Length: 264
Image (cartoon, rainbow, N blue to C red; front, side, top):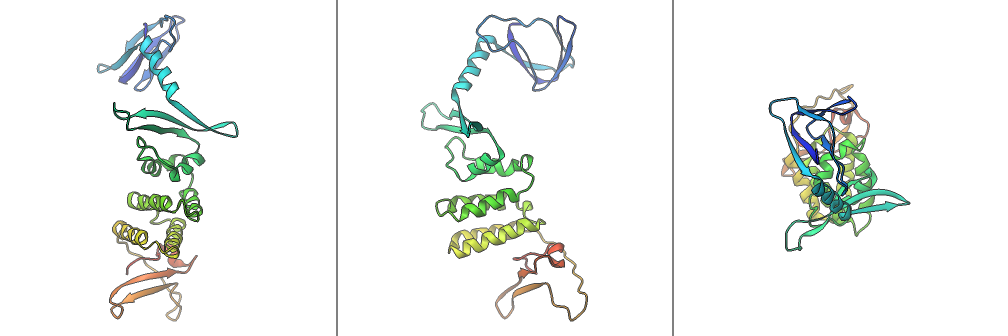
């Protein structure tokens, strides 16, 4: 075999001249290595299922593609260690839509990239990150703490707000039912109010209201005279509905999932 093959469907059994066998499945590959020297892979390849498909790539093409990819790679180093790898891509033949797309990186570096400039060929980095961070971060608050910290930098404020708005719109379940994330949202809301970012605050409130789900919460008071562990706001005399204004931290109401902004 003088080519390199990738299995698209099914499985292939490879028996090598020394008698060693290997079962390869979808996504696996076999064949020559990416070198310009003529090479042959020796052995017997048997398809194991009826609908087995694999693509064969000529050795020269395989070598050229890998070399081209290597040339297009940009490695970001910090203190002698590679923390991020980007690949140069062009989306059209005119060369106007070109730039670097993030291929991989450390958890810390990927989080930092949320508030950095994104190229025209990588416009969905934030959405991709929010969709996948659960696979490499133990808690969403690792991101939340960084966002609150970056909000204090005026140059990053708009970018941080965009990340939070996308997060609330696309993954509101990350906030509902998680007291720490609820407090993060409240703190972020207070920050927007403090900085007089009224437009952004309205967008955040609209997103939260649109994504919130109706739920039933049961609270038992130790006695009739005991104060409620939360404060209500509104009513007919105010001209709007009844809302939870604040909840005592660590109370039974917090444990039950009651939070600021809930409409009764």
